[in-house]
Amino acid sequence: MKNLGQMMKQAQQVQQQMQEMQARLAGLEVTGSSGGGLVTVMFNGKGEMRKVKIDPSLFNGDDVTVVEDLIVAASADAKGKIEARVQEEMSKITGGLNLPPGMGLPF
Image (tube, rainbow, N blue to C red; front, top):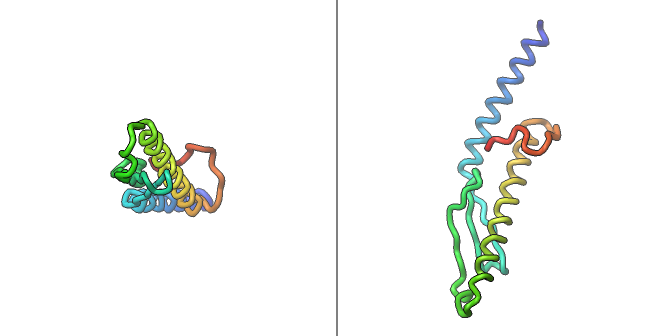
């Protein structure tokens, strides 16, 4: 029974750490860029796009698809950074235990 009590205490600690991590990540802002910085996007820690900045020089031509592709690339860059940060935070909580993808992620 002593081990069960310790396990419950550890589970409560992990739950508290997860809540703290979620609060830290909610305030996180990550910027992704593409086209050598011509397009930048900002995401919050929940993976929501908050801002897009496009260098005006991209609008000298008629090729809107280039701008659209750069926005997608910048978004992917920012999302990758968020996923890496979440994985890093999860690793701290789980003590390096490798969980299957998608398991235990806070969002």
